[in-house]
Image 1 (spheres, one colour):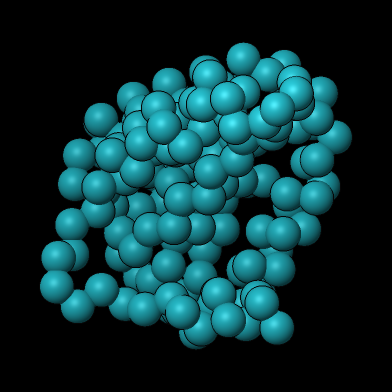
Image 2: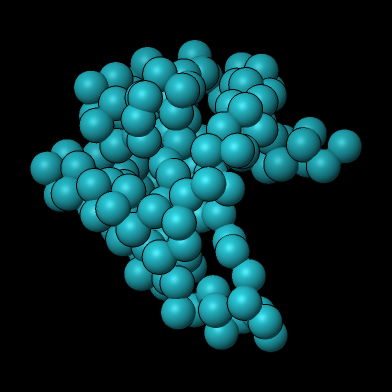
Length: 139
């Protein structure tokens, strides 16, 4: 039920078609998934697995900077999954953004209507990698 609501809420952009993947990765690392912020959010010490799911419909506006931000995020212990949607996705860029092994962290959907099976594959992948995530150190 919730999964269908989330998938149903995904819409194709109608105006600005820019893909600011580097900004999304930096924001996730520096604010949402910042270790200090996470520690302030919980009353007692807790280990939090940090995962980013980057959904994209094509190459980012600045692939070089996106690669740098992805590397910095991985170095901060963030696991990055990439979901590419549509015919304009750059497989090479998706591989450079995703955690390794990239085949376990990269998913492609032909169009928004085919995201359902991809979402199920993504959920399975996260569950399969759970033990790897839990053994990672919290930085």
